[in-house]
Length: 148
Image (cartoon, rainbow, N blue to C red; front, top):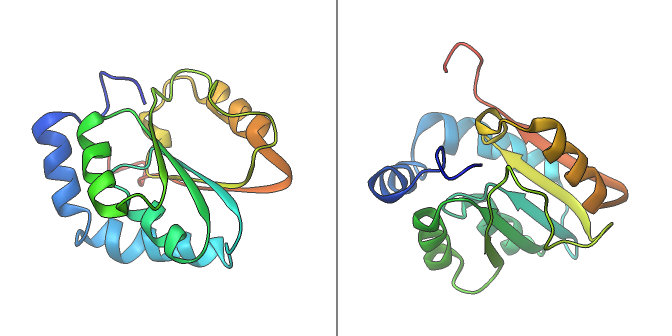
């Protein structure tokens, strides 16, 4: 997501502290998305808008090699603590192409609760298609349209 809408500073800290236990994040979205991901052992997974590293941590614990990308340095700081070196984390504005990733370099991608923050959605989807291997999977969730 663009710098203007990424969760920086105090807002990033606020999000990181509450995502562990907030009803939607911890008890609805995350369990559903991880169930859909299924067996990720040995998979190369891109965590798009990785936030404080909640998905990356779980995917890594399940055997995936995870690259997490996030537009907020504050959230990446939280993710680094949570992941303790078990995933590659990249500061990246999601409004920009995924230039750091080669074509067909990931088996799957998770884009949880971030797509509604993106302005250039067509570009992001095109980039995800480019970096996913043939037969790769994309899991995407967004907030309920009446909540924003």
